Length: 151
Image (tube, rainbow, N blue to C red):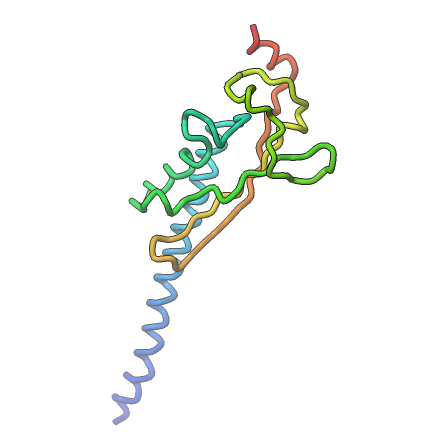
């Protein structure tokens, strides 16, 4: 009887430990994929029109991070891209770069007008864990660097 009592009290504790371990493992993987997505987007660099970029933009680069754990690419997504509005001093969904300038490598914008807030989100394939982060990017080259790329 004592043995049954001990076993019945130990089993729920073991089951809880297994569930917590599985939860922690998934959470760690979600955070690792999110970190990799951030690296891939920042290494890709700032683009004036990321939604229409011929290379697929930030979303395409971020989704490559899912391969770390052989997760579907759709587990990583760019939830939103917002642009700094220098007039209202707030984030806006309107890109200050005119559509006609999207393919150009040199765009005459102040550094402040190039700021973009990219929201990345990773969701575990089973939907049990989700993590999100905002990343701010901009074309922060010096005037000398910009002049060198024009020549």
